[in-house]
Each structure stands twice: as structure tokens, then as C-alpha cells.
Length: 490
Image 1 (cartoon, rainbow, N blue to C red):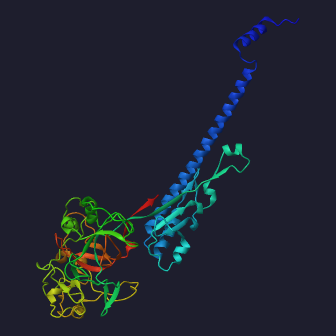
Image 2 (cartoon, rainbow, N blue to C red):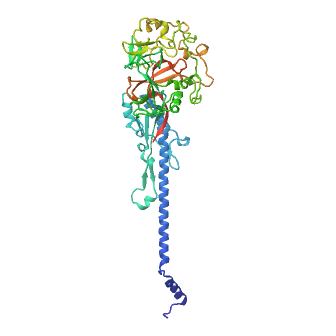
Image 3 (cartoon, one colour):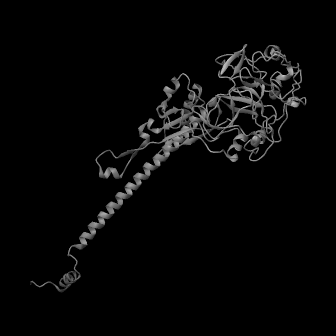
């Protein structure tokens, strides 16, 4: 009766012989179940993390697209702020079926809120709301846009999780958001700079507008001007990739500068707002051929793909009849130099008021090839400055009183073009490529940095050579309108 059956006794003997506890089978099962539970938990966690990550990517794509679309519209004006806000709002108004902003695996639309956009003058801020930006009296410099999806409905960033619902009694929701900053990374300004010839941005010259000492429609040899000394001209090279506030730079390599001369674009967002690194004098003998790409003449690294010619490449030479609208043949390609030993300036006969005694009509050079003289007004009228007519030359340029022929076109020779005043390039040309946006510095310059007072628009009347860069003044440019490329910032 008390004897174990043989089979059971043998199993017990085998377990004792192997040293395994009698209940190990149950422990292994429990461990297996625990491992399966942990594996399921990790799978749920991985799934949760992937869902949060996907939502983050969705929101980041939305923020990137909105920031770039807004930054493209910014030009430093209140109208630009309005356009930026409208552009982003219209982006969010696009239906999901046509690629509008969306989120989720079954795409849901995202509604726009102005709380999600802010503006700044730097990619690093400080940032201000769209309302505060619009309230600024002069929104100059607000060229950067930031989109933060945290300013939208919070539901767009909420992800309901699986793992947290198992281990926590709290609401199983994780929130995420995305942020994007976009703004300019290039500016259509030359790395070639000269001095402002007068400290005043605007002043009336007997009713004519003069800007930083330059007169609309008058040609200058930009290599020969100096407001602080009458002996030699003063020119500068700005590092094309070192913006305001950058420290001193080492010698600038040809391969860095030459492409900027070809294209007229520097790889910085702006040239004002701080001191820019400079070296002097500008080595025109190294770069004059790159200036001439605008006349369909190419030397490496310039190509017509990256630096197209102007649509009108005719040179308005003073001595071959090209400036045929002048009643008196000019004696030089620009207004004749005048070394003013009284004011200690190196400028031209068109500088002093009135011009120096004995000035002749021929000494004013070719006038009004691209731009006309305009009447003084401050601020500039909403419709632009009012231009003089050639009948006013007797009052504008005295003594000497040059005259224009009756054949002078109703616009200007460059803008008229045609057989008389125009010449087409061999490839596709771009209007106004001959206009150089030249920084005007506060002089004298000490050390290796300078302050940019303004940006002058100078029209190249003829090709440059190794010592001369002739150009006609066409007014000042607003820096914020010159940005060329918009990119996302980290």
C-alpha cells in the first residue's frame, strides 16, 4: 500500500539525481510569461516612440514649409509682414487632398493660428509676435520668420500611447511640437565698397536730390573718390562671407571673392547692423574681368549660367559716338576729377555747388545714360522721386551748361535700347545686371572694419579695366529688398 509505483519512483529518482527542484517546470513557465510580457511592453514602447517620432516629423515638415514661405515675402516693410502672414495662412488653407498641411496616418487638416509665427532681425532673435512686429513704426530688418507649432491647436501634437496606458493611471498622451526658422542667406551687394562722399544721406542741392554726396545721372570713376583727402582714391574689399560683427579676417582668397564679383552676391544676410571686415585698397587689377561678365565677356570663374549678361550690353563710350545724345562731346568717361584742396576731398566737378569756376560742358561726362536727376523730397514720395527733364540741364550743371540733343529718348538710352542705344548679348540677358549695389562706408576707416552707411546703385557705363571702374549713380537701394536666397536655420 505505501510503496510508490515504479514509474513514479523512477521519475523522482531521476529528479533527485539531476539536482533539479521538483517545481522547476512551473518557474520556467512563469519566467517565459514574464519575458513575453516585457517583450510586449517593449514592442508597445517602440510603437509609441515611432508614433511620436512620426508626428514630430509631420509637424516639422509643416513648420519648415511655413517658415520658408513667410521668409520669402519679408522685405523689411510693413507690407512684407502682411504678405508673409497671408502667405502662411493661404498655405494652411490648401486642402489635404491637394497637399495641404496635415497630420496622422489618416491625414487630418491643420488649421492656422497667427500665434505660431514670430519675426526677428536675426535668426537668433529676439522674436516678436506678428502684432508687435506690425506695430513697429519702421519694421526695417525683420527678415526672419519663426514657426512654432506649439502655437497651434495642442491637439495636433498629441499622441495617445499604448505603453503608458499600461504602466500609468495618468492620461496616456504624449505631446510634441516643431520649430523652424527661415531667412536670407545671401544679399545682392558687391564685395567692392567706396566711401560715402557726404555724411548726410539726403540733402537738397538747389532743389536736386543728392544722396551721400552723389548725384543721380552723373558718372564717376569709383576708383578715384575720397571724401577725406585730395590725393588718392580710396576703395575697399569686404569679405563676401563675413557679415557685421565678424572679427578680422585673414587675406581673402581670389576663389572666394571672384564668384561674388561675377554674380554681385555675397554669402551673408546683410551688410548693415554692425562693422564689417574690410581690407584696402580694392585690387581691381585682379577682378576687373569678373566685373565685365555683365557685358557678356567671361573669364573664370564667371559663366553665363551663374552670372548672366545684361540684356543690353552696349557701352556708352564718351569718344566713339555711343553717347550720341550729348550736344557737346564729353572729354572723359566720367565727370572730371576735382582735387578740392579747400575741403580736402577728391571728387569731381559735379560735386561742389556751384561747380568750380571754369568748368566746361565737356567736363561733366556722359549724363543720364541710365538714370535721370530727381527732385529733392524727404521722405521719398509714394510714387517715387520726380525726375527732371533735359531742359533743366542749364540749371543743374553750371557753369558749363551741357545740353542734350532733341533725340534724347523719353526714358533713358539704356532703357530705350534698340539699334541706337542697345546691343543684345549672345545668351539670355537679365535686365539691370550692369547695376552694381555698392556699399558706401563711413570714412575715414581705421583698422580692418568699417560701418556701411548705405548702398548705392551704380550703373556700369563701359567695361572696367585694371585701373578704372566707371559707373553712373542711380540712387540708393533699400538693403532688405536685396536679399537673394532664403534658407532654414538650425
